[in-house]
Length: 253
Image (cartoon, rainbow, N blue to C red; front, side):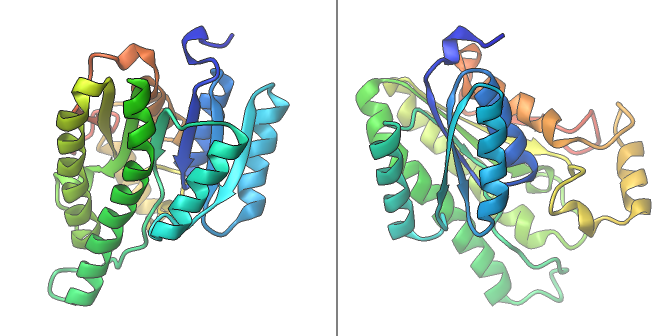
């Protein structure tokens, strides 16, 4: 059964070829949104996600764009406008690469590049969708962050510092855009199984990670997607500027 509230809303999910982004795109599609599956390099993955949404009776299209590149983001927005219309829901999930190193090991180039690219991508995609959201008096923006933005973990200084900046950026967007019917919220997920980052965690680490949660397992992409879907639809209309932990009750916040 589709949620009638979501019918026809156009949702752009960045980094939606696999993992959390793909799970989110499929779920939003199943709930009646028309989904734009953004991807960086793997058109096969993105087209697979589109095909699965269409097979379930939904509407979707894949659009390649490096969200760190202003021209690419502008092209993507134009493509979506020409094919579907204006984006009303933005889920910014694209993973910007980063060095896994301690503070002592990491160089400013490594930390600074992650900070710059993380914030540039968030800035560009948000800037691209805000004008039309404002014009329509409606918008939902969901930023994907991480528990390391609040709780330091070994080797995660580049990720945690850049995502902490993203968290605060989202709060400013929420504050400024609230009067225009646009909400902005953040999901901080604990390490998620079946994602590109999961390979960094050996089996032992993953068992330990599961043991640290109250629910006794690691998160799956679907767990995170369901939380994203709440912030992406009508149900969360009076919730904005929130940083929501999806971590199974782990010691992450």
